[in-house]
Image (cartoon, rainbow over all chains, first blue to last red; front, side):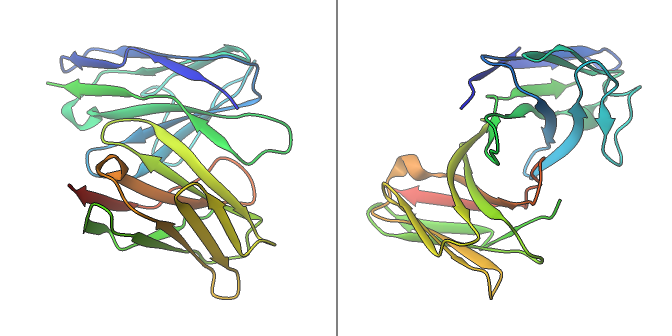
Length: 115
Length: 109
């Protein structure tokens, strides 16, 4: 298993600003992901955070808007840039832990409100 | 990645009753997982059932899998108010998982 923490847990930000969300895992993991959950919606995968290389983004998400860093196997950041009210969501970090495991673990989420 | 679809979208029951929610998917799978999300929180992994299993239990949870019908069900017995949450299924032959819209369960005390 894996224990994941995220910072901040919530924030209220002004339009046009940027927020960086941190994800810390208690063990080294190969695969780490960022998800977004807009109000009343399901989770949507933003990108796969790759250690030592650029993140792999899903359709509809771009690096300029959601830059991601993955400096090592236990830590990643997601930045939400030039925010607008449409970016108000819960952002979740997720990892796959354990060899030959399909179990995915999720952080507690960061609730972002953009005014 | 493929998406499981949960049914019903919303379910409201009295405390002590059983809650059943279903998941359908479209192609062959290696496993299927159920997750719970309490309001505004991250997902919690509940149970994983492999394609060669037909039923699995964990506490008050019972999951069934019918690969011929490409469907799974999650049964919560003797529900409690604390079971109020959204429940998601996910299938994938590889990571990352892709989620459907979930079933919103409300357990009324």
